[in-house]
Length: 381
Ligand SMILES: [Zn+2]
Ligand SMILES: [Zn+2]
Image (cartoon, rainbow, N blue to C red):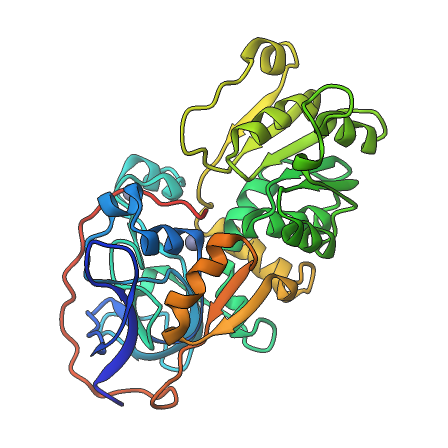
């Protein structure tokens, strides 16, 4: 086994990333070393690449990015009992404390002590990544190839927000067709939604929405206002003249949030999952109280509940994610690929690291990895 590896890192508090050779990380007794075969680039990585307000407060360089990955276990620590060398795995990127109120009541996705792989500790945009045994998820290579297996992590967010309510036989509106919104279209179809209507301001994404199974797609920029001839009327009339049963707001755009509350039927459900960048004005009386709405504001994914549902949806072929992988790239191509993501002209980019050697167990010494202690939660944008 080689001693060094290629990794994509934020090395300084400024825009951009650096591809460099660093020592292969050393595992602790409760860790496994994964040779990365595929890693998805997420909106969160774009924020860190850009070094925006959020990431400059949260991320402490130097740091290897990447929290969506799949690969093969090549080393296990002395106390690891459920994972073996050769296992084909992914990981839940959120490492939770297990001891706080949320963790102890089955709500670990809200753990205030969460440490995130690729945000708070070394990530998977590298040939190898160290992962604690407790967040390892075993995959079936025959059913889910690496480029799909690495997408289970963000897909779980869509599973959480879409399957949070009973959608069988319901009309579903999905506002915002980034990766999570597009995943949700497939999940809603697979879960028996009677119809799925989707909206986005980007035609490339609307074409993908149709591929994922949306019956009708809407571009809000083609409509003026919310009244006659507006997008709300268009969506309601496409739904047989009725308000939509369930609306998933996945964009975070203030206009779309208002569309969600107007296009939903009286007594319907609105799920707020997209993250607005600033406070949003809503007519609470007219568009919430008088409509007797149920509103869910959701973030993250249920650990590990959503992983089981994700495995079922993907391994049984109920949702096909292949149309959403726009391009596979090398580690060395990340910097030039980020602007493509920023322009919204690609959906998922999957990094395929080139390896100096095939997966094999190593006999390197195992020592203790210090625990990072940065806290909080992160969102997939
Ligand atoms: Zn906790
Ligand atoms: Zn992500």
